[in-house]
Length: 343
Length: 170
Image (cartoon, rainbow over all chains, first blue to last red; front, top):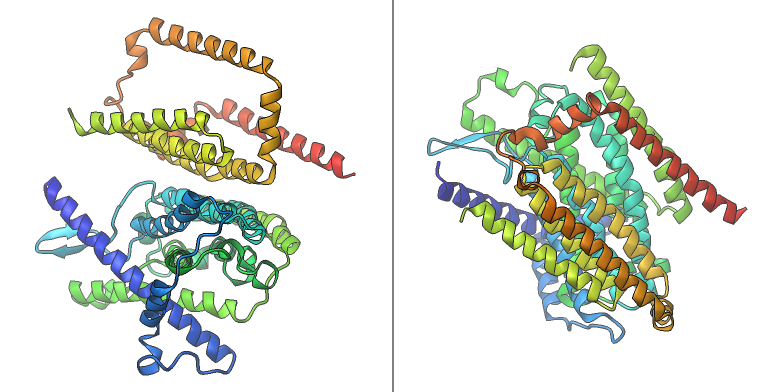
């Protein structure tokens, strides 16, 4: 395979992934509105298209036609830049997440991941640690105290939970002996899922993922009763849609990361023992990945409509005094597993 | 010119321009953002040198953690009083220029008198030097004492900061 073929294949993969992500983000919004409606004994959107299936497009057109307002006191350039930072980081994280095994198309082996790099997990950590810029800058540049408070809160929250997130991942790296996402998935062959081997790490990582994506029990940066809209109070039209999209894209990426690191990625336990053909196995495995991500997304939404919001001191106490020691405990547990069972 | 050389010049240009922009901007937040761009360019240069671990850690630690805290502080303090302070104390400028000249002379001396081979070490000999596996192995075998000493130093600094902050509250 020469360089041009490689570039072409990568470009095709990027286009496919971006399209799927954008579509699933808009349908995730509908999914969330439907689930919230069921949780509250309502019908949810059901006017636009059958079962409300065209609602996402109606929403996008509505936002496109709105006036884009930039406040007088805002720093104009950074105010416009912030949603792009948030979107860019949300979408580029997906480059290292594998969504299927290696396949052969026209005799060429193709890995179902955009970039198979040997520091993949660190790449995700680096990008999530940058995610805070979009929100912080949005809060600061709006020139409004609600926005600023939301931005400052979010940076404190994201930095606090990044610590327990990093330590939970360290446990996974110990048992997988690699930072390469594909190797981590392969190490979870059969029922050797990290969620089963390291249940504490699974819980701390999931909680940290909720906090990093600013989802419900941790949505203090945009707590509407206290902060109006938090960091995006002063945003309207497509810039607001940018933050909205980034939030849901982050949710999908967090779910995909949880699946890759803890739930065996695209693997179906012992499917290779069934003697199915290569093509069918691959399709089933990609479907398994999609279903697992879907279940995680459902849990994200379910929690949002069930659990009330934390108070700020509770959030910090939980992050530093509960989640951080627990993730350290998990690291010791993972090290013991590696030492005793030679995983 | 190979791709590596072109990439190096592009990244070096970004790094140089962003650092100049950083020190010439009036608004502290904009300066901080230019510093972040500078960190990214540096991380790119590390990647060209096959030091992947350093490159990613540069982004995680400097751009992701330290600069966020900087930004945090800049947003909370009133930068106008700082500007007035600089306007009042004109004599500071003489000191600043003197120190800048001193540092410049020092660096120029070091670069001009260093042996060329020390400036351009052969990176092609051992490409795996910069990967996380080899860095980790080196840190926990050959350099375990300095590594633990550095960890101990950071721990004591953390405890010191905690005590200083607590004193103010009590």
